[in-house]
Length: 254
Length: 348
Image (cartoon, rainbow over all chains, first blue to last red; front, side, top):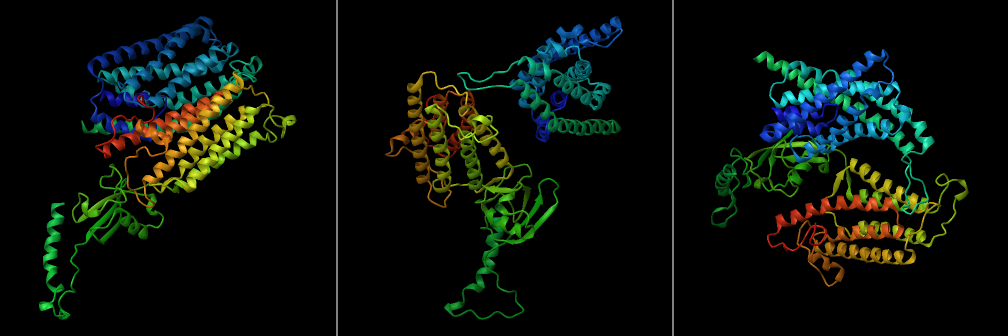
């Protein structure tokens, strides 16, 4: 049960294709899930991560109350945001060593895209940090992550409240588009500064005969959202129908 | 299996009677009322269900026990012309492995009524077509960059020529490599498997064409920087490239000679008189070893990072293939030489 829940959970902020879904069904029956030591570790990890994102949430609220304005709240939570979002890299490791039965590729893709946004865009282009779009994705991520990590924790302990399960498979309907808009607007806002400064760009001639245009790269990243976003979103809607309707049926029988 | 055997023997004993006339005399015509004499075979019944929906797609009531899966696929096509044989995957279990075309119905673990599950593999395309498009693309694309056609490097460079000799040499090597591959596809390779899914061609072409364009862009760039160690580096790289190309060709010829035309037999490849094939002593897939070597040579020659990346990606992919091939050799041949590794001697 824990393993199955964990699988579904990692796909949370939206990943997973049909193949991963199928693996989840058969995998949970065959594998018993992580061992006791791994479970203990995973519980600690997920508790810490839940707490971390709660710190960010509280930080946001306190800063808002203190300032009376929602502009530039990023600076008040910059450090914990960087720390805990980077800490999500461990999730890739969990999948790689097999204590979480999700696809390594998919998890890496999700985590890396966020780490990229935090470090290579928001951290690197100081000018965008005061943009409201940053706040848009930060709020979306914060709520998503608090629910996702607590979902994990409770699942591992085999006591998953229905409310958390419901929230996990419902709030994304609003939060996911919100996060994506925030991310896209932030990258868009960074473009002129990247072009101006030539940030992370390599130009010819050089002895490796290679060049890199970070400006063009960011545009490519933005374009890549077009095919990926709808796919993940509808996958989650599908998951939602599967997970939530299944539970209701179960309840009737009990 | 047991059941089918016993049924067959019963049918046979019943059927034996009328076939041989008494005393060798021509057998008298049986009266019309008696059932038509049946041939001494039992026919199998085969039903084909959709693997996903379990819907009955086709029922074949008279299938010879010796029928192969390929023949059943042909029969199935008659009622469902949209699924030509290469598109079909037939299995005993809806989620199990696909049956091979050579599998014989009689030898499968089924009763006299076999239930097969069908899955549509999607549109198929022949390997030869895929290979030709995959390889013709890079050849052509590279030349576009080499000749600096307009809209790539800026107007003033249109149709100019690089002042570095190594750029011209690289163009010769690159073109040679892909022409060699095209000719090998047409005249050397024998494909055991006829087709692959159509979408593969898009995937493979994006990979080959995209990388070719990326590499060609930098190598033929007006701001190209020639190799750090000059002519010495180029000569060494050319030597590696040529040796590996010859090696790769030798292996392809050796593999061709291993498999007679039209057959699907598999044998252990061994070194021949050609010294380039002696690598078979140490690895299962020396053709990949040589292929990777060629690209490393090309990377050293051009001193271009994208070429090195292409070599790395290619190496990763070829290692996966080589491991698969190596495993199937080990599974198939008990006396497989233990010294061999998949792709890199003693290592990998």
